[in-house]
Length: 184
Length: 423
Image (cartoon, rainbow over all chains, first blue to last red; front, side, top):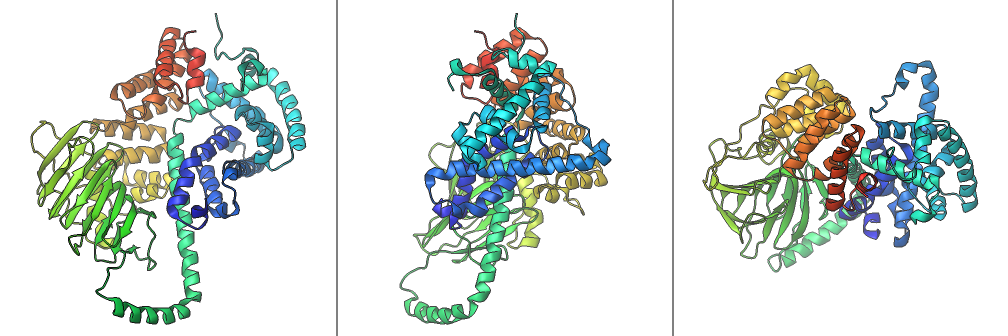
């Protein structure tokens, strides 16, 4: 960390090698399929390299990098929402391709529902349930208190469950244990 | 989390995660390209700030320089200085470990003891050691041409190309490493080198006028004379070096010669470099749409007809990232027709499954990926589980899932494999 902070290229490269996969995974799982994912991963990497000097505690690196990725996701969601609002006047740009087979279609549907949640609730929900972070880790990555995370998560769960149960594909996913397909 | 304590939402989230991971078949590529661009920007910003700091301290440096010159003259001959090096036209010495990329033109690396290395366009390298006796250059990808200066018997100069080490005994050589095909080539213009690495027992001496080519994947070693049509010497200098050096890089992607045991070396064909605009340069900068626009202006068929198999794989990447999957497929098929393997079958499967709505074709390509082996076997097997399950081929999906669990117990499709495999 100190070497990366002091501008050693090999250390900067090593930092990205070690945590790059985590950054990509966090962004993808929070945002869903996004044609700009590669650019967002690059943005997060650039933020990490630009501010690596702020981290003095080696044990805090992973949490700090997760928070950079989450912050990048936050900005992307806000930008996306703004683009969609502007796209009201250009509906053709909103065309999306729904993947052909069932799991991909269901995944697409999950993120359509998540798009309806406020940003903070969506991030808390995805970190807790899709990334399987503890409540404390969600709070650290989101830069908010534990109480705030619990409150956001509670609202997100209620909203998401209500929407998912009203959706034929996702209702099956919710009700069928940990099997992917209909059995028997 | 303990499965017994999982709520329906926990299980649901885990399922979403597994499907998200399964859909991220190019995650490694995404990370690699983002890493490359972020590090390049970061290095560029550091050079900028270093220059501005240099302006401020220039006068103080002048005083210090006078003192150093006086001191240096006094010490001259008593000890050799550690080697430093400059990259391109940047007047500031680079540090060991710095990442050096030649995007659209060759980049010269000049060492203080007189050694000159030209990193060909498209290449990527690092200087991993520089001391009084010499240096070590890691060639991550592409090709280079080097003229090594021997100051004394203690001179230790070497190059690493993938898993190979080239120890320089002589003075002038060219080397290339194609990580996609696991092929190294070393040509010695003057002097000799010792090469160590896979498929080579001990060390392989390559003498003046010889070229060694090793394909790790095909387990083939070829040693012979540098063919008449071998790449010409790459001049040290950015503008002049770009063209011949690029030819060297492309040459390494051509199929290997048959006739195991013979000392035959395939003369790499020279690839005409298209005039303005160069889609390769645009693609190297990550400007995928612009690269494809340049290709289409030039004529897709025309570009395909004169591109090497390696260039066709790059062209397919440009098309995929520009969202032009039909052209990506054509480029990949053309690359395979010229001998390319590796990722091509997997990418064709991915395009067929995800973009062209042809799951049956996709299954064929993923099975071909498995048959060809290599680094894409794991995601290909994962995709086969998914496709066979979706097609209602329960037995096929279960067999693929069982195989996946056996071969890749910690793979990214393990959740799906666990769910589909036989109980």
